[in-house]
Length: 521
Ligand SMILES: NC(=O)C1=CN([C@@H]2O[C@H](COP(=O)(O)OP(=O)(O)OC[C@H]3O[C@@H](n4cnc5c(N)ncnc54)[C@H](O)[C@@H]3O)[C@@H](O)[C@H]2O)[C@@H](O)CC1
Ligand SMILES: [K+]
Picture: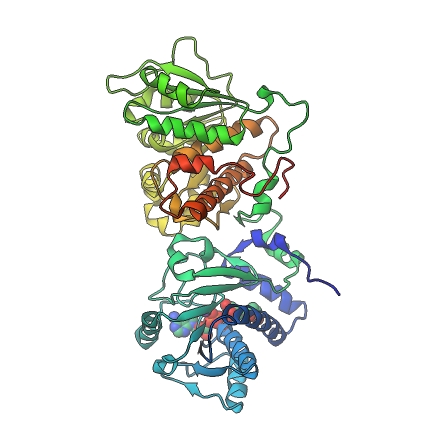
């Protein structure tokens, strides 16, 4: 007995509608019949639908059938469910269909299944399958069709969408007119960009990829060796952890990080960043803070060297102590809790040659300094970690494009020649060639302080890997995955309301996330 090959590698590809079409065209050109592919895909969708509905009482299933191949998929699924004994109600408000879809419609009619033009026909169904539009949606849903979609949403039934919730734009994730509010969405073949866009999240429900054996060679032929869009997975995240450590390792081989953070007003930000860095395993940690809060930091982080700095009247860092040099550090993480009064040292750090993570007030200060030219003139790598508000201040020319978070991150990275980590429900990391996207997170992290933890964690990892030449974008995506997984685990144990930033730092332990020192799970 053979098991189906586990193709975890396909989980990290993300495609646009155009790329998906090009990949499918290759399959058809190679000889795969369109109808055979539809049959195969729909067979797999049927299996997954059955596994979702087996445990709930379902007798009647409604199916929305669109004019294209998304509708064709839905009709094949409907036919199979009919033969399994379910009662099917088909709603197809379109007078014209693609040929293959029309053929399936004809056959299903011959089986005695009525084709309804009226949305009310679905009202008494226990479950609805949405096959109205997939990646072929090309204009907004309007008029009676929009009313039908809104009616389905108002029923609040269980709705299983094929490929995408109808109405969601495949690339931007935007709602085109209106969109189906799915409880589950089965993405076909390869992840589409919409699944990683915040704007689509409320419509997608639970998501899963249905692999239908697209050969890797065909994927690579269209996406190239270094795909433009990549999904962060557990496998690719842990592959870049600095584990296992060489037996002859010593502290200076594991990174020397300087955190520059905190003020009278925001003392906790420096502590949280320090605790994030602690979790990273960084070899040496120094934290520069205004000198009057040094005792507080020392009591929380006994392993760190706390650098007390001269301070401004309002309790921000004014300058570094005399004889203090940035040259010794492998990386600097700067920004949490600084207040905007710390502009002198932020400028000094930007002028320096260390790999840098700039966050929070560091970004607000940068926004006053012609950000694009300041960043692109830096010799060393820079990672900036804005939330959308900070992003707008840094890249005012890109504000309009923020509705496509993936593309805007890519543009910002290219313009500033930096790595741009755009915060949100689905973090996007723009780099010169690739945008990494994090598919799993939790709203538990939408809370003050969780960003400070990320900055510290990222700083520690960055300091540790610059020495062994791991690409910086690779470690940024690992930090984002690690931070989000800790949030997910903490929320499981403590609910989404129980994950304050300090609690989060206690969940950064990799063992709790199912890993061990050999970098295996
Ligand atoms: N090509 C294939 O063999 C495969 C296709 N698959 C399915 O096919 C789908 C893509 O099929 P299509 O390219 O036919 O596209 P769709 O089925 O998404 O819809 C395209 C049709 O809808 C019409 N349309 C678009 N926007 C509209 C609007 N706002 N109002 C009214 N009509 C509108 C178009 O004119 C076109 O006729 C995928 O999402 C997937 O479900 C999968 O089965 C995998 C294999
Ligand atoms: K659909």
